Length: 449
Image (tube, rainbow, N blue to C red; front, side, top):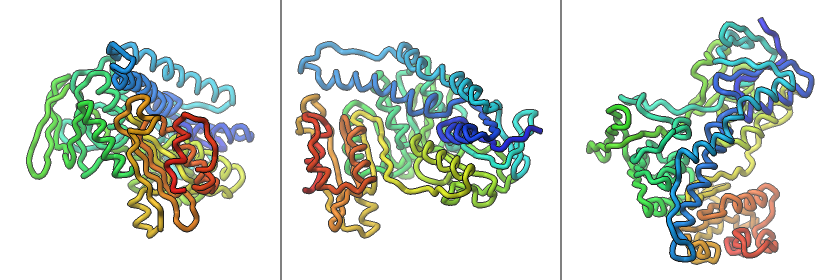
């Protein structure tokens, strides 16, 4: 039996933040992961995905500017792109383990299973601690359909040795949309099957509608209210069967990507033995990110039932958990404005309330919505789809929501977030002089001042 002050399960940004803070405070710390050390974002998620998106953006930009100063048609060499991507991901596990070793954090490889409220097993080893932190992230949600084993998840897509000619994405969320753009710009024929009435349900409906038009303009097919019932075939000859409006349909393809949602990755943990409560979103935690049913256990990152599954939020939660373990519960989870972006082409970015949410809350807001493909920042790169929507409280002049579509909006959304976080009024933000001509300099025209 190994005895520690703290056991952390998961080595992503949430778990690593807690482990390092505790060790620097002099605690004896163990950290466990069943996957290569370093977490999802740096190896199987946001970071490698953005590398692929960057190349797709170059293809899109060259196509937009064809005949306007650019001649020729560049193409994506998938094998070269994968080699470049690996220069970012391959070194992560060893680098992470070395960092833990340098801090004298003891590493364990394998799936952790709870034996009791404060004891876990990893392989043949048993570990005990005063506090245990669950930071295992999420995994693809089981679809429970025949042929599910034929699907490839997001990790598999990012490891493809070559891209097939035809790809089907199951799900209409950000992963599906981002991968669809990458695959389409690399020359694949892409179909998205989404069971809902509209994709990207958490984002502004008007901007999503424009994004869908942008995707359809490059040949991406989006099928809504499509309930996938089975996947059949083998190797690169697959058939996806789905129902739509009580009618059965099928589509032939070379590859099927599971992008239909994720759930807390806790299947092997045996949480019942630890008395840890779980709901549909994840480990049920109080405002201190402490398990509501086992005070020895904390949860942070995507596995917890708080907030959105975003890396900056995971690190933020990790800092809260570390402080509460070291100093007693004193830091609480706060619903700060959190920006998020869908790295499609054009990019979709959002922070704060949507128009629908503001109406449900009965907020009196000034809504400004405009398509901006005729603005200079869009015209100079011949961008056909661009728009914004801002929501400003009529009484306080505070920005309560901002939704952007177009190049550069993944950076501009940070300006709106800064204003919301620090209560900078729409007038004061609009009166701020920003470098011109930049995407940021368009900000004044997005506000009702």
